[in-house]
Image (cartoon, rainbow, N blue to C red):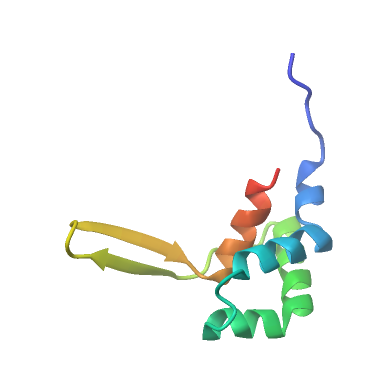
Length: 92
């Protein structure tokens, strides 16, 4: 029988996990303006992100839609905030 984890969300939304996720999400993109701005205020942003995740007020940011014309498909990607949250969620 699988083991049941309790209070796993508080382990994911802690400062160390979010900081590691932010650095992982920024890997290879540090020179992009949005990523550089996020990293410039990393401590404040990570604390705020953790608090909004824990109190349930987090809302996703705007997505950028990219249409690749030669294969007729559409991709959507989020900003650095969604990448950080996604890295943390995927690490468990």
